[in-house]
Image (cartoon, rainbow, N blue to C red; front, side, top):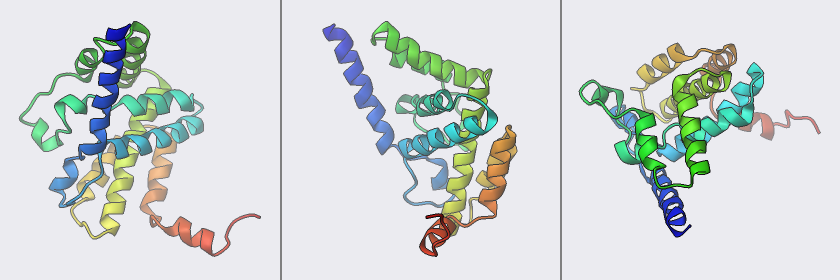
Length: 194
């Protein structure tokens, strides 16, 4: 039991690295202080639950997969697509297997199952989670563009092209036609039901 607790504690500390590791692709776009991997994963999980609900899937499962979709980056970091032209990182399932090697079997299966399902893209929830990953990137690019970063269009274009579900495509279209703070104006102007 002590070894299992040590393994679990180690994983929790390791996952904490995602709060410090930055999403490196944004550095190429000129963003000096980009979001962390954990920032990205959190909003991706929220978006995945929304897309899954709209698509008739299980929102909890889609969100759960999204929380684990980039956990491998504690070990391989966030390699931008430009770097992936020259580097071949280990498959995510392989990295995850190493991460959960010393964990209790039930926990290891839970994490490996989430990562495997996400990577296989076989379930509706996995497709929704993958769309959420791309939609979150698109939203972040729009927010960075509003902050004056003009080199983000390739992220918007590639994210848009990768979307598969009708709900994600509709949301993306709305994102591209809405300012990131329009919701604040609606709230402050009383455009809400009492």
